[in-house]
Length: 258
Image (cartoon, rainbow, N blue to C red; front, side, top):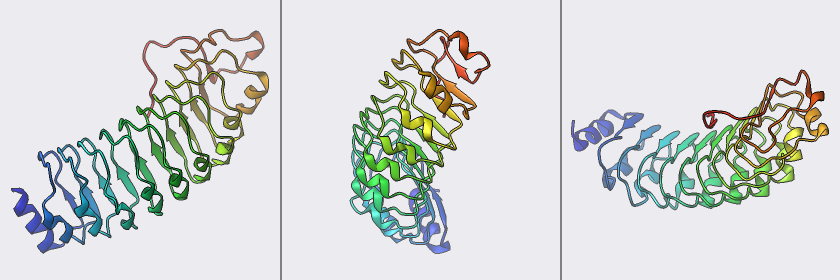
């Protein structure tokens, strides 16, 4: 079916899901704005350049995937998608995310991997229902203090950025189970990471960590994995016997676990 026939069928039959990925689209047809029954929309692997403003009329959308396009900005009024729970914008040259993202109050998953991001908007702290956040392979240097408001966040990937430290109130992420900080610029492990009661896995290899104080080791005693490989801290102190969850030394492959 060509794109017109697909859109006809979608509108006539009131589809709730539409996949028009891998179609070489540079612009979205204007009639997309009439597909108001849609709850899931897949637009990945096209060639979209201009922000797809047509989608802001689809106020029943719950899942929107824009991965692998050429977008430099997202629609101005993306905040109108009040029911959105999943947003994927991976592999677009965005450089920034709009402050309006903070108005997506139902969002549970946000994926912005390899988008050239240099910062994170402070409004991200409003996403109180967010559970998974993927921001790896960007150029982020700092996290806004509002990051500590993501109290329901369970999974966080910040690998391959330029982060040197985290806000102290990151300790408020008491639901966090997994965090990936591989390939950043940490010279020491932030104390805030020892105060997360639910944290089980901390990946922080390929950084510049030279030491791990004993009091921090005690704070990490609940972890099942602390990966410190490929740091200047290479040798296990004698009194760390039994602490097998702490991985030191080298690894043959980069550990950008997802």
